Amino acid sequence: MSEQDFLEQHSELVFNLALRLTGNRVDAEDLAQDALIRALRALPKFRGDSKLSTWAYTITVNTWKNRVRAEKSRGFWKTISFGVLGGPDKDPDEPDWEPKGNDAPIDENLEQEGTATVVQKALLQLDADDRAIVVLREIDEKSYGEIAEVLGLPEGTVKSRLFRARAKLKTILEKVNA
Image (cartoon, rainbow, N blue to C red; front, side):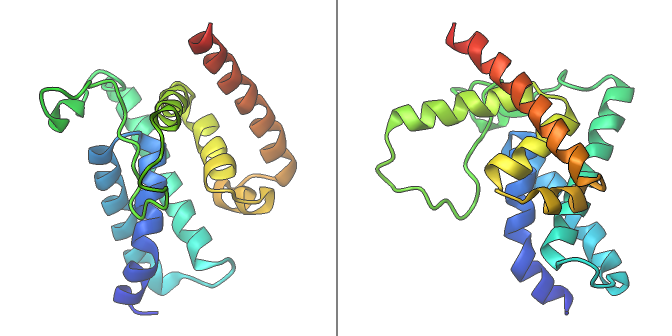
């Protein structure tokens, strides 16, 4: 597969996953770019043991986890907000939540948009491992087997971590609705 073909087929998938993991467009664009560069460099070594899309997901999740670890160790985690780039009326704590290729109807009602924002804010409160597993299962609708492959975990571990992550997310959302 040529680099151009890879980018045409997987750049939107990588960006959408990056957006869901980071919660804002600026960080997602940066993460997607890094992940795609890593994937392109490694493309000649791709053995075909998994689907190319699963491989791209794995690179994206691992690139994001490495960033989260690096930011935490430098003390930058959640101290710098890039939301101000959205303009003076943009709440810097409110995540951007519009993946490219939006299939939602144009007349989607405001209640649904508000719910999506609340859920995205709740997701951002989960730690990196919990957020990745919830995004892969609930938003990207990956199977347990695919998640296990992307995260490099046994399928049983995926199921138990997902159970715990859902419970944490539920607790966060209950606090919002209280």
